[in-house]
Image (cartoon, rainbow, N blue to C red; front, side, top):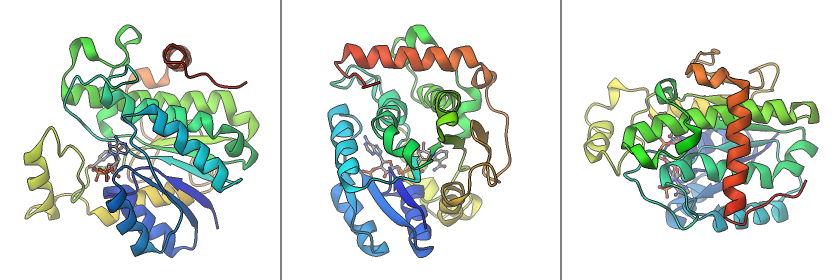
Length: 280
Ligand SMILES: NC(=O)c1ccc[n+]([C@@H]2O[C@H](COP(=O)([O-])OP(=O)(O)OC[C@H]3O[C@@H](n4cnc5c(N)ncnc54)[C@H](OP(=O)(O)O)[C@@H]3O)[C@@H](O)[C@H]2O)c1
């Protein structure tokens, strides 16, 4: 039995994975933005440990980390799954463009704030990335893409950043026992992803053509597979996987160790400008 934290557990792939992982008897700590939706999922799967946080506010992410640390001294897997594609540019109160903040900065911060527990647990970080990352670019001079914002491009870029995050987590913490991976769940029918910028996608996605896309249950199973799987056996740390569990190439930039280091350092600097600093 593993202790698994899942963000974005109130809908879509995260909620579906929670249903499947709960059936396997894992201890789940579910994180969602919309309290009522999270409560409904939690009641359905019989989970009591639920945490509400809006990742558009980094103060809520820090509070979430504190609440999680108070709730558990073991985390085998942190799944950074919350995210999606949003219109913009919208600059949050923390000074980041929101697509960048919700999909990347929040998970970056949460992971670092839980690092002591994660390494003590010899744990793993699983990031839900996307095939969109293969077309992404990380521009250190315009990291959150606000200067040239296009909704879908921001999503491509941030999913690449999320993959680079995994590579740098591996480089910095694997020798302390942490493993990290990113995966593409595939284009999944029946989720709410992209509902805000592309309302038509939601209608198209939900019915009557859902049979064209892999089902939600299939998408949830991908996440559940990587969360449950033993690092080093089911998957290799530092790598990006395709929805069929295969190692997969993504954008060329994702394999640049200097860039992943620079992305990490720049993110730390940007957080420091917001008064967010880390011990150690
Ligand atoms: N569906 C696909 O085809 C697909 C493909 C590739 C990658 N992905 C990725 O898979 C992950 C899950 O997406 P999904 O398809 O399951 O979409 P979804 O049904 O829209 O679920 C997204 C989850 O993220 C949460 N979330 C959104 N904004 C948030 C915020 N500001 N703060 C905290 N939580 C927030 C949502 O909370 P609420 O319930 O409050 O909305 C929900 O729980 C995302 O990272 C997405 O980019 C999806």
